[in-house]
Length: 304
Image: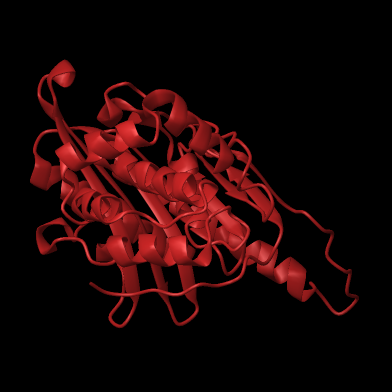
């Protein structure tokens, strides 16, 4: 596959414009107060910028630019959403420390993107026991992430303790808006929680060791070619990407499709985690195009 590198969380700024929120460093671990709505709100720097008699300070200019980008993306997503299947999207930028979310608190069934949570929990469980993954666990994890194998996932879901075990791991990882289901693919989550999880997979202070983080990256950067869609479509040539997608034709929604994509894009000056969750897609291919368009819009307007 394409793309990857670690970076530093910097900045502290919050911007809320209607269906979106821009959150500063330090707020990623907490619950996101985001919902759909009209494009009204405010943008506020966490630290007041230094006044300058000669004009706006660099901090003020940066805040103005950030607010413009958020407003432009809000407008673009609102326009795009008209008449299309419901979706939410979040982007966490490790370079600036900011998180953008559109309908960030809306809950969706995960389908196979929950497999990233299962992998993280498996790694935490092994760390707690002071051991490496067994050969069998590695084989199952490889099948679960790279090939989205459901039988492998069911086996590992049992190993980590099913609902109680995965819920406990989610709490450690800062996932506050995710409710685990006994049928793992019907776990409900938000884009805000998903970018928290993705960020934990690359953060020094996130609870996962460097070896665990490297292993997760190895799997998510080498998914099967037929599953290399979604978030990676927003990457530029020469950038690195990781991904885990989820797709499920839902009988309770008139056989419409859940199509989800979570992953990371890194490159020169770029280090972002992206989550797009959707449902009620008429076809799988249409849903894939849907999530890729949403991811592309975030890149166009946030300019990461």
